[in-house]
Image (cartoon, rainbow, N blue to C red; front, top):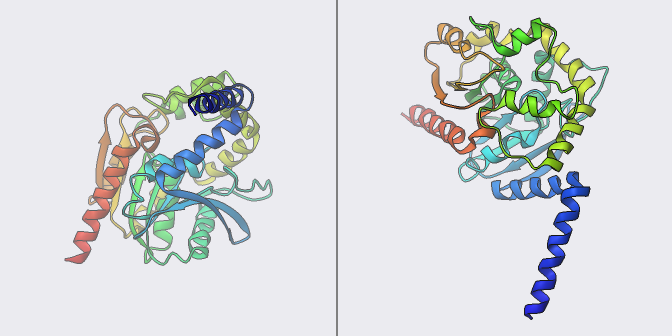
Amino acid sequence: MKRKILIALAGLASTFVILYFFFPGTLFGVVARLERSRAGVVVKKIDAASWPTPYIEGGQGEHVLLLHGFGGDKDTFTRYARFLTPQYHVISPDLPGFGENERRPGERYAIADQAKRVIAFAEALKLTKFHLVGNSMGGHLAGIVAADIPEKVLSLTLIDNAGIKAPKESERDRLLSEGKNALVVDSEADFDRLMDFLFFKKPFIPRPIKKYFAEKALASREFNLKIFKDLGADKFYLEKRFADIKAPVLVIWGDHDRVLEISSIEVMKKINPDIEVRIMKNCGHTPQIERPEEAAQLTTDFIARVRTHKDR
């Protein structure tokens, strides 16, 4: 019996080594499934206004819709979702043009266009009332959705959101003025530079899987540049619509964000002095990845306060 167990373990170890070095994409798929299982979510797909949209879903309770940022996908929020699914029904889609969703060169991907697609996605899932959470581009998008359908959005959590003209220039904007897009990689080696740019303390990624991520980023490079250009058509749209948001708003920001300037909060505060603000110390542009439990706790505490206020 002991010999059989040793043989089985040796076989598993050999399989892991083969996947690790020769099939990193397959290994990442295994890891992603494990992370989803821990979070209590599964992958599904639904047709939303002609877009066959993959998404992760899990948990029970009030609906919480999570919108990822530029270059991200549905799994950007998987670890964060782990701390929501015990209390809430969580949904995180691949936005059109990203992840496993379709890339259609003839379509526009400006925030106003993407907001219509998110609303169609929510309607396809029959979400009559829901909480919204978005990071970066997804935060810009979440804000516009909240402004467009205020009767459906119960609360809005913005995590290092785009869409606001900050009083100070971010490092990303300074680089853009020099002709460098810090969010798009130019080579496999450039992927490390991107990780340093996004995180204060970047997560450990094994070399073969990092190579796999870099290859995927390179394969999406040209289409991402097209989307980035479309987004630039009205890059401060959220600022114009911020006063139309009727839901309570929580703003979470990493104090070492190099992509978007933390001074954006000053602008949002002037428009709506009632927004709640939580600054995460020693954290970068994507708190839901860098410190998922802390970011999720800030969100669940906020939703609990919103519900308590509503019940009074």
